[in-house]
Image 1 (spheres, helix red, strand yellow):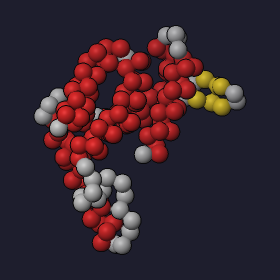
Image 2 (cartoon, rainbow, N blue to C red):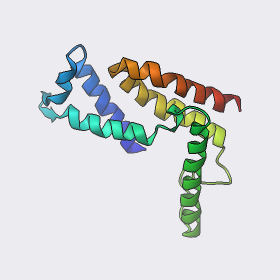
Image 3 (spheres, rainbow, N blue to C red):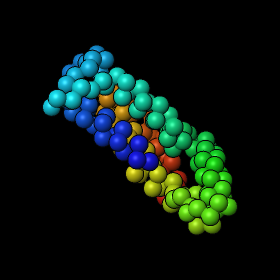
Image 4 (spheres, rainbow, N blue to C red):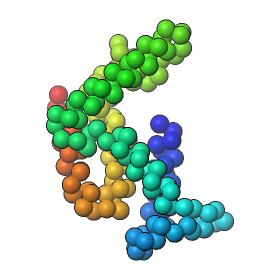
Length: 143
């Protein structure tokens, strides 16, 4: 998860530095305060990461199906950690993880902030995908 927030911060820096400039600018390296940046490489990493966290951006019932699959994978990890007498990672304990709350938190604190950056860069993306995310959040908050 640390990687997620570092990538989000990096994309925010690019967004501020390149605001109001043509989209081709994202293909050019730039220097800020003596540090060289390559926004195109960071954008590729960011897009790949967006795909990795995209289950709430899918229509129903796909977002629920993928939430279940991801939680099952996490529980297998938690079971393995427990069998090795290791501390169980957050959201990996099948006895204490609340599916609904885990999804609400995931959408509010991981998905929405990163998808907002992408939506700011690509407005059509925002108008297409944000309603699915909002619908998934409503579903998890109400169930």
